[in-house]
Image (cartoon, rainbow, N blue to C red; front, side, top):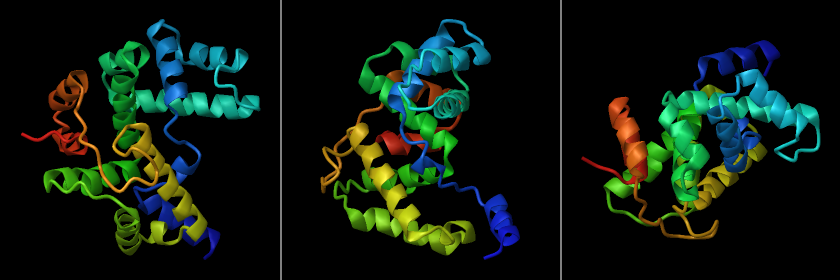
Length: 209
């Protein structure tokens, strides 16, 4: 595939494989949110993270890049009260909001959480396994030429990131778990989603009606 064709496919697609690098980043996003709620500007937030190496990354370039990623992720929430909650609420609440931010930032995560996880909750189906993740990617590859162009190693890494995301948010007990846990949406997130009329997202958090 030529570079020109690859660029054209990428430009047409809503999907990205960048989560192989930009993963859940809970610690990093929470750290960034705390600086934002202290009233620092975006530049000041990035400079503080880089200067003090708050993410404990090996290079300044990687710290800066991920700080900017975290700021963009917070931006997707479009609700300062959720940024404050990430900064100060108990970890389970903050993690759930970070998951929602990730859904809004990456169409891949949005679609997986709605069409796979949300549908399982809707159907009262608590089973979960490789077949669910594999099926999601097979469908996506059939629908989207850019996704179809991704290497097998990229697809495998994305599957690992998604399963780990479910474990981090207690949808699964472990990466080998075969059963989805019931989840309960935190009130501040439910309120924000309803106020923003983004209610399609509620299904991903086992919230109906």
